[in-house]
Amino acid sequence: MIWVLWVLGGLVVLVALLVVVGSFLPKGHRASAQARLRQSPDAVWAAVSDQESWPTWNPDVRAVSRLPERDGRPGFVMELKNGKLPSRVAESVPPRRLKTVVEPGLPFGGSWTWEITPVSGGCEVRVTEEGEIYNPVFRVVTLFTGLTGTMSQYLKALGRRFGEEVSVTTEEGRR
Image (cartoon, rainbow, N blue to C red; front, side, top):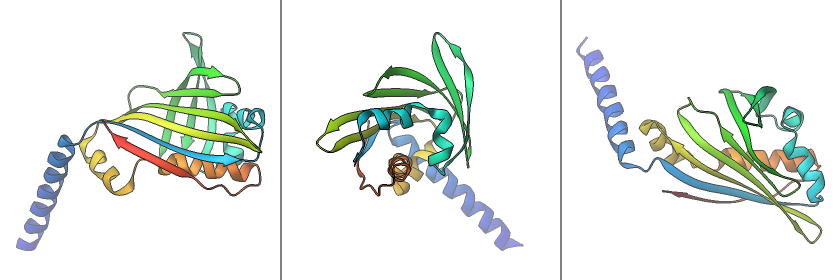
């Protein structure tokens, strides 16, 4: 019976330690991932800006449904394996830039900006996340998992959508 108390006590200490360490980490971060595709900016824009088609090419997205417009901005909800992610289009400049913002009420917040730049033989696609992680334990977890995994997966899935295997480069920083 005493070992159960030791295990429970150890877990409490571990969680407390994670909370303390996470409280000292910055909430904000900026991370990006980029890849080069042998596609025109218009073709990539068509895939990226049509959120309802994302489940057809991105295995991480199970479904996408539309939200009613608010303040003239369309919204959508992505159904992912870990839950639903309601977002809103904050900026749309075809075929160059698409910025989406996560709706409030989640343990994290921020935006994703897709930038499509023409280059010789195709285009370069960069996804930049400017976000905040409110839960200090989740901030500690990102020290081990990184901040660019989801963006990298999206870009690889986008490449496969066009029959390409892409190489993704990443950058991340906390603020």
